[in-house]
Image 1 (cartoon, rainbow, N blue to C red):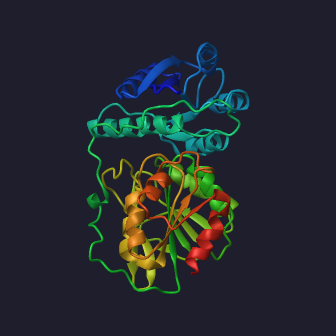
Image 2 (cartoon, helix red, strand yellow):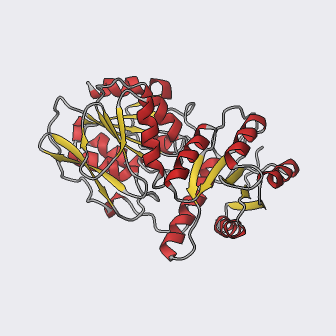
Image 3 (cartoon, rainbow, N blue to C red):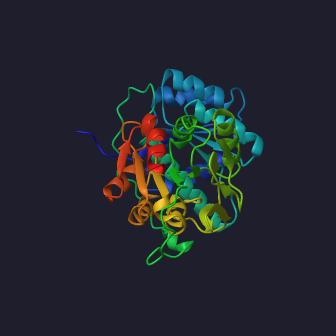
Length: 366
């Protein structure tokens, strides 16, 4: 029988201050323990030889060996869930996308010491990322997934989409029209899953708005990367951008993105606001806005990720007449968000990742 235990983390960073701050943040969570720290990949390799951690947080720029090189060696020899830890830079975001393609599970920003609200949000994001990584399925890994306690999100107040816009009770969206709009939510494992989905879409696909949990700056690079690979246009959403056929808008990190309607035209609003369902951008916020603005003209899609962001919003979309889809467990890196939505009974169809694009197109043309 598997023993439920804490998530053991190895921190790799050349900055003593960052190592100390990350240790303090992670050990403030009762479900996480810091197994050790390392100033560079060579020291880390010795620690891993002594005891294998459940999760590694890895800096990008370090002496003797950079983080990307170490990540590739690690994934080729001994796959362990890795969360990349980065400074907030536009240039660095391109490198971090390479890390995700090389097998990293997620990206976190190095915590900034100072404003209490920022530290609290850093703690939420960092601890949640580590918990999600601990349960992630890695390609090439033969190690059985350890059994951890169900993620406890702590005492912090968890706001709902009510913090951004009122519940859709009594709100009626426009009647069914010939144009559909697709709204998608994803988190851990979503960067690669979205690539698979979007690469399979034809250039005249219905307009789409996506929330992928990712820090600011990185969503712009992510959108540019997808745009270079896909037949559809992909861009980071800007306030007032039109949602139209052949265009995919990615919600910018650290901002909420809402679907709005003017007549028969859809566009997005990009807004500041608090964390909703522990995230900014929040899938619940996008989905609720789609309920109000698109109703039965919408298609809702929930993909790989930890937690329940998007589940309640998808239920609201379903109640308003939208068609709803969820990625299946077998192809999800973390089957958290889809599982929560399925448990609410608001998913019309559960689909493997490879078949999701076809189902989206069929649902949009129904």
